Length: 102
Image (cartoon, rainbow, N blue to C red; front, side, top):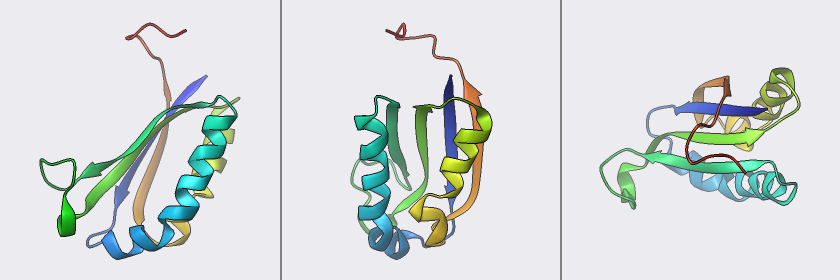
């Protein structure tokens, strides 16, 4: 089943994000290689693909896991959690409607 991992950053998270980003991306690449990742990316703090020093307000990951518990466990182990980037992480079951899943 698919799960949405919706994270909200702490204020002024940019420096922490930059420091933990390589480890965070490596975990996402592992999900992708395993065929589990649907999409992942940050929420820019301003209306721009490159928010510069304005940074980001959170992240969204949609991925396939065997259970909600497995998705929550994976999300809790994210390097952004350990680095204090996220102030809140919510994991919810997600049903893709469009585009039609393969």
